[in-house]
Image (tube, rainbow, N blue to C red; front, side):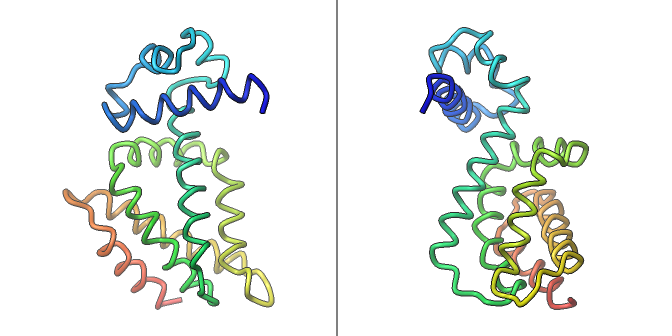
Length: 173
């Protein structure tokens, strides 16, 4: 790993730690730089702004959740696979409600950042099927994201309730 990658990872780890401890809004880039042990300008040489730090941190967390859930994925149909991955993802988003709302509002207008990850996830849902159905995969993801948005708007979001709602939607496909 190069020195640049090590520094980037230190900044990202510091940012995530502070976001968890103090919340996204209350965390300054100066505090992130101090915790990472780098100059404030160094943060901006790796990340354009604070939202990019949050997006990179969330991307890493989501990748870890998907990788962990894949270890015990025994589902064969795309709908059941989505349900399998949805519960740990919904749990993560509910546990990090503040960041999730900030991230989702940013993603709505800048979807390009997560396109690769989203497309890979959709293909993984169909990995055991004879062919990939882009339309069905997109509709399934629409159901997933609308359930996520709706669930995060609850005062006390519950992953299990969100999963039930998603299951009911997917049953219509």
